[in-house]
Amino acid sequence: MAVVLTTARAFATCDAAKKVLEDAGHEIRIVTPDKPLKAEELIPLVKDIDALIAGLDFITSDVINAAANLKIIARNGVGYDRVDLIAAKKNNIVVTVTPGTNSLSVCELAFSFITGLARKIHVMDTSVCSGSWKREDGVELSGKTIAIFGTGSIGRNLAIRCSAFGMKVIAYDLYPNVELQEKYGVTYYDSMTPLFELADFISLHLPATEQTRGMINQENISKMKKGVYIINTARGDLINNDDLYDALTSGYVGGVGLDTFTEEPFTDSRFFNHKNVILTPHTGAFTQDAIVKTLVMAAQDVVRVLNGNKPLHSVNQ
Image 1 (tube, rainbow, N blue to C red):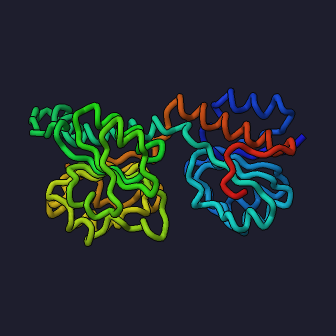
Image 2: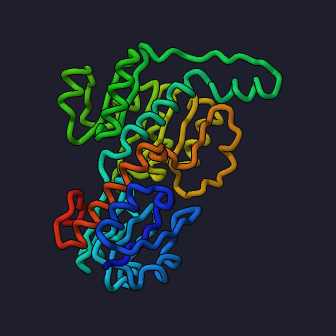
Image 3: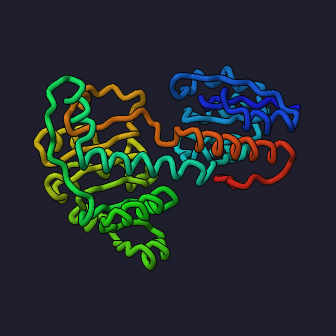
């Protein structure tokens, strides 16, 4: 029997994922933090575990070195920038992700930001509830151009939905999707600059890398159309908050929908109660459907590795 620690907050209520581990005869230790655990909080929890099903915790080399029996870190999601892959490989620890399981949920939240900002739904909801009954003039999506940065599973699904609403879809990705080009008329560009210049809406679906961190900054905002809407359901590090706030305040950026932030919980009160801002607490993948699919896939890879088999979704092998 192996010991499996879970720090993914939803695991406690996911009977399907529990069953995968229990049927394999493993002991489950459930921790339900209200925010991602820092290294110093994780270290005392990992000393005798064999597997970790992790949320957005900071799994540094110190955490990995403290876990002498650890064989697999199964990320409950697709991002792994908070896992020290070098230390994991050095210690023969497999790191896995759960691709595709939450793509529709994140995509649908991104699309909700698009429609919500376009019609200023959040503003009129406040108006009605306060008794002022003030209407806001929104914009139609049909005929507008959306720039999608990153057309992996989430970006691909968003492109299909935007196309169905009559939007012109342009995209940037190192590996253009032929289906999107041929079936949905998506136009790819080799650089980001044309997307900044042409878009009425921008939706970010890229990882945080040396090339993409802070890509929404004063220089690139200056290339955009006045009134552009910016949506980020990817990584908070893609945005320079000071530059974005300045553009919002001046009216150059028409509105933003943010689900991910540089620091979480997000405490930059400048963005709170701003008429042109919608904020959600990193909830893109947080639907009943995605939670079950994601946790079950993570648990299944844990069982594979603990049984001496290769995982299906490793990022460091």
